[in-house]
Length: 225
Length: 252
Image: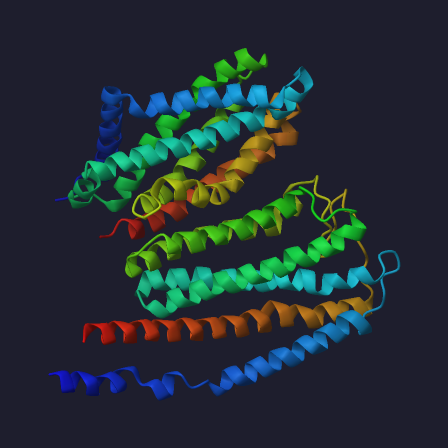
């Protein structure tokens, strides 16, 4: 008797949430990293107001993608250390439910960090980042990283190199997501007309759908043991 | 017991049949070598000289076809990966690996020829143009594929993960193909269809140029990758046999 699909997905997401609420391990390390990253960027780039407007989208996305890699590694490592992944595989649930469950958790954590970054960066860089379209871009972009990242982190956690391999495997694959996100957000931040950058948001959505289908199909092959 | 083992070794590995060179491969190799010579003749002598760029434009007859060769090889990786996950036959994974290595080599040819052309035309060896960046990242993706393989000891798991990554990696190839259509700020010319607005070093093809391109396209796009992949598959099969022979020897 299999647990119904959505019930299983929600149960896995809830498990990750509960573990996070108790340990606060993931969000604190991801948040701390993100904070340091935007501070280092502002020192390293010595940004004046014009330059800031140009690069702030790039800074945001670089920070989000590295924070998501950090979180993915940690989340998969805890599954591995506690052998809870083996338990998940033994449980009478669909393999796809495991994928969507882990994806859901990773997505929520990364999005939380991304959303917290927006007011913080508005403050530090003196540019208003609280914008509905930017939030939509952030959601779609983070979703793209979480989709590819969940599949690839499940793979790398089983290899010898572990943590160090994930960024090497993930950054090139996530490139289409990154490219579309950066272009859409720079357009939004420059206050360019909708027609100039809206196509990027559509491309981003299309890339997300393609990756979601592909990673969902391939996930079953990386967890069989 | 020991005597049986010794006798079973030569029959099980059939050294004479597997190590013999297949005739078709020899023929294909000779054909490819001849075709390459013809292709070079077409590119260097037959095609008319481009009026503004001069002789350096002739690099294009190898530059573009070698990318399509890489595209074919990386597509073979997708087919090999998909078929391996379906059938679990090692030969498909060998095809995927051969595709990655040959594709990487051809992308290197593509990048190197592009760089040599760009020096006089763009006045730089390298620039962070969207297409150049994307092509470089494509190369890095397939290097990451090789690193992933090296990082897994269990052969079955290695083949499985490599198949998955080989399928995902094709997205960077597609990205490189379409990027000059979606990023208007590229300076890379598009030989098929209209070039982007800012394209530098664009040229119109005369009939003799089209002939030279159409000769080189199947040579670099089909013959070279297929021949090299075949050799690479043969090499991998031989290597696996050497490994299994070593294990047999150690077991005694």
